[in-house]
Length: 79
Image 1 (cartoon, rainbow, N blue to C red):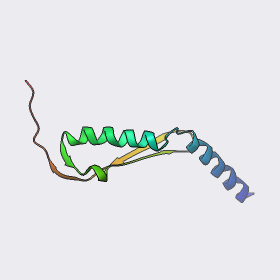
Image 2: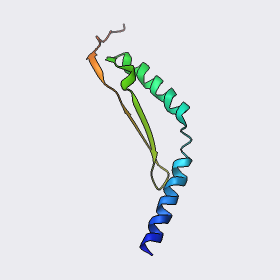
Image 3: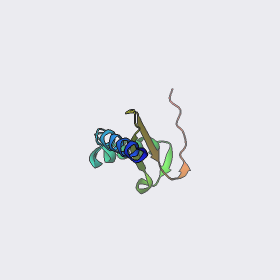
């Protein structure tokens, strides 16, 4: 019975993950957009930007981004 419950939970998770609608193209666009934003504030290595989307068992999305920067850029004041 315990194994059956685990199997059902795994199937639910797979189905929910399939519903993320986050194919590689979407991930690549997100990475590009995040890079553009970060690049205004940091000197970012474009190859270090990582984007990950996961869905939990109730359908909530967890979106994670990470990147490596070499330094902070000077912030320009607007008047």
